Structure formats: structure tokens, C-alpha cells
Amino acid sequence: MSSTAQLRYCPDLYHYQRRETRACMVGNVGIGGHNPIRVQSMLTSDTRDAEACVKEALELAAVGCEIVRVTAQTRLIAENLQHIRDGIRASGCDVPLVADIHFKPDAAMEAVKWVEKVRVNPGNYADKKKFAVKEYTDDQYAEEVAYMEEQFVPLVEECKKLNRAMRIGTNHGSLSDRIMNRHGDTPHGMVESALEFARIARAHDFHNFLFSMKASNPKVMIEAYRLLVAHLNALGSDWNYPIHLGVTEAGDGEDGRIKSAIGIGSLLADGIGDTVRVSLTEDAIHEIPVARALVESIQNQVHVGTGQKLKETPVISYDPFSYSRRATERLIIHDIDCGKGATVAVFTSRSKWDALAHKLDKLGDYKPELVIEDSPITCIDPRDDDAVQALNASQSAHLVTITDNTSLLPIHAFRLLAAKLDKRHPILLKDSFSPDAPNNAETENTQSFLPNLLRASTNIGSLLCDGIGDAVLVQGESAPGQSLRISYNILQAAGVRIFKTDYVACPSCGRTLFNLQNTTQKIREATGHLKGVRIAIMGCIVNGPGEMADADFGYVGGAPNKINLYVGKTAVKFNIPEEEAVERLVDLIKEHDRWFDAPVAV
Image (cartoon, rainbow, N blue to C red; front, top):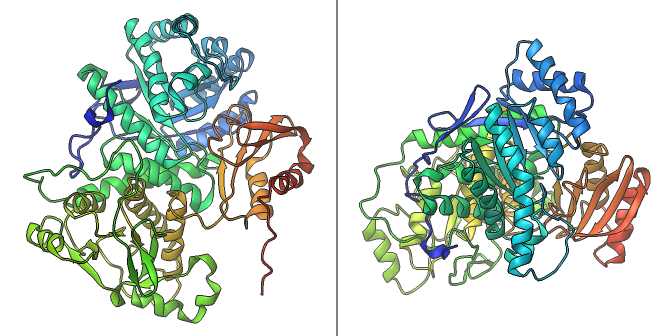
């Protein structure tokens, strides 16, 4: 692969332009090309229960789900896809079905008979996945590639014969031993794993496929997708395959929605992505409104008017394929450090501060730190070269932000500012350039809250993942407490300010061996005070040690009603009865000196 310095994933990082792709047909639903961005989800019902799967699929389709995925763990289970498909079609619904395949090529060969699309994970479709560490000789490497190709080609040929689609879906943390040992558990390894399968498909003249590069860490996910698209561009115009977007194991509640918006939203804002799935540890039906709102959020911002394209496009200030925080000088504003690696500060408006003044001591970790009207901040339009030059000529560093009502998308505006501004100047990020009206009550507008949450997460989170931003201000959400909660949760999800326990929780599916939603809540109740500890909650081995990625501890379904506990990617406790497992997880955290008692409420 060529150096990342020579790769481009986006034609214009300062102006929206949707990536042009060929169309991939999944039944009667087109992905990519001139089709709209498609929204999909996955059944949580057991694939062996056709009646439950049909009911859930129809419910999903009724709320706008355009493609439905269902797991097929074994060939025997895959046989039941026929009954699921027939039940859905008998109800007059033509929503396409996708079989999710891990480990079992024979399951894929059975599933492809009954569904419109097959998802394969290159990391575990045929390659070895035992977390073995070894040095592969070229001959050993080639031998495993040949075996993988031997297993994969029959599926490619069957997809061609039956006019099926395929998703080549790589997941961070579930790469094969062969790829891991040569390329590492990195975006580079993820891309190479997917391209191996794509080359085989193309060699057999099969092109009805798309890619995904999922990860639970938004930074990794963003970098992997960018790297994939950059390499597709470099390979030639006929490598213009569509892209499926998703943050795997995003979790539940606001955290899951924020993490999804950071990863998915930032890529959509750069014109990447033809179909999306928001993976929440909730009933699948709740994923669809979030996915639709996320797509609409990007489209609404784009259509508002982003100004004309720049006559000259400055070189961006960051590496899109590798995270590094922008280097600035240190400023102290009202006793709060800002810039030069300091904790990213949280601003609010004077009206919101005043609305919360009576309960500041009760806000815990969600306290406002600075008031924008009371702070020395320089506001400019980054297209105003005279204003930028004046700042760059000043002897002292300034905290700089974008003037409100600027006719640029926030992502594009702050990228432009960072590119033109001397690095010594810290930057205050805003989610929106339309300040909310003064609000003196902690009210919640449920109709507008989700769009506000997604917009803030996309715009601020994307920039933080690129190392831009030393302070944040959420002004698109009018409720004072909610705007602060959004601010802090974005910082946590982007991995730049850890102030609470971090959970990686996979969505339920037919493979899940325990009730993920109830278990996640129990684990939150027991461990929610462990600031800085990352806990993964996985329903089965497929989403187990690999896809936990960088979690400190893992709670993984090993068998029905039996739990395996992990430290990192290593299983250390096996077959624990489910009713004892949360307590045993706490014991494991204590054994590794990561436990402290929750503070006593006063």
C-alpha cells in the first residue's frame, strides 16, 4: 500500500460532495449510485423461531427499515431462513433479507439460497482466528490465502448465479491471525483484509458488493473507512463500490446515539456512506428513528447553504488517517487551562449558567466551566483572510472560534480555521452557528432533542476525532442541563475527556446468549462509578474477545446462561452461571486494582 500522505478520501474537505459509486442491488433496493442513503437494522429474535423473526421484520419495515439482517450461525439454522423469507413475503412485504455469517462457509452457502444478500466477515469467514502470535513466512501466508480463496470462491459464484448481493464487512478486533500478525489490529489491517476478498470477487467478475469497516471506537472507525475509500480511489474508478456505515457495539441511551453520530455522521458529512445501521443495545425498532434522523441531520445541514466553493483550498492541518491532537500554546481563562494538551474545556452561555446557578453544586460531572460572554474569545469567519492574518501576526495566543451565522457547515468551517490559523491559537468548537434563544428553565423538547443531540455529536465529535478543538460549546440545544450533558458525553465518546465508566455493548441478535439490555443495566448499576474503566458486554463469542477491541474487562456469553469473563482479550473465568456473573465481574475488577467504592450521596 502507498503512503497515507499520498492518499485522498474526499475530493473537497471544505465543501460537501457525495462520493460517486456504482449501484449494488439488494433485491429490489438499490444501494449507492443515485439511490438515497438506505437505513437498515438486524433482528434480535432467534433465527430458529421463524414466527418471531417474521413479526419483528414486519415491525421494522413498518417504521422505515429498508433492509433487514438476520444471523445464520450454522448451516442448519440457515435452512430456517427459507421460512422467515416466505413468511415475510406472504405478508405482502418485500423488504430484502441479509444473512449475517461468521466462521461457517457452509452456513453462507445455505443462506444464499434464501436471502437477497450475504454479509461475510473476512476476519473469520475461513481464516484462522485463535489470537495466535507467530511470524508468517511468505509461503505460509500464501498457503492460508489460497485456503481462504478456496472457501470463498463457491459463495462468490453462487451469488453471481442467484443474483445476490454481498457485504464484505471487516470489524476492528476480529481480524484473522494472518492479517493481525502481518498488518496489526489497525485500520491498515482492516482495509487489507477486505481488499483480499474484493480482489477475489472481482477476479470472478462479481461486482454486486459493498464494504464496511466497523469499530466500537469512533476514531478507529473513521480512520478505517477513510483509508478504505482512499485506497479504492487509488485503485481506479471501477473500484467505486458502495459503503455501509456503522459503529459496532455503540451501546444504549444517549451514549450509543452520540457514539454512532460521531462515527457515522462525520463520514456522511464528507459524502461517504450509502447505507447505515445504528447498533444500539435496545430493541431493534428503536434503531430506525435514530438512523433516519442522523441521515436527515446531515442532509438538512448540507441543504441550508454552505457557501460557494473556496477559490483556494489550503492544506488541511491534520492527518485524516492517524489521530494527533493539534498543538497549541497554553492559555488560562478564569483559572481553567485551555490548549497545549489540557483537558478540553466546556463552555456555556450566560443565560444557561444563570438558569443553573441554583443547582451548580448538584450537577456533578456535568458542571459548566466557562461562560462564553465573560471570556476573552476572538470570533472570525475563516474565509476572512485579513482577520486570520491579523491573528497570526499577534504576539500572544488567542482562543478563537467561528462567528455565529457563518454560512459554512461547522465541520468545514473549523477545518478551514485550523488550516489557516497558526497552531499556537487554541480553538473553541461550536455545534451550530445559530445560537438558541435565552432559556431560563430546564425544559425538554423531545421532538427537537434527538436532532440536536445528533447534530452536536456529528459536528463537534468529528472535529475532536481529528485532533481539532480545545474547548466546546453546545448552543443548538436550548435546555441548559441537557446542553451540558451532551457536551460531556461527546467528549467521552470521542475519547478526549474520560469522566465516567465507558461501556462497549453489542446490540442483541439471534446469536445472543443472555438478555443484553437487562444485563447491561445491571452492570451499569454495579460499575457506573468507575471513572476511566472500559467494560465490554458481548452477547456471544462472535462479538467477544476480538470486537471488544481495547476494553479493560469483558462480559461475554459463552453458552446459554453461562458467562465468560475477560481481562482485555484474554478469557480468565469460564462458564459462570449468569445469576452470579455480575458479582464475579466486580470481583475480577477488584483483583486487578481497578475498583473503588462509589461515593456516598450527601
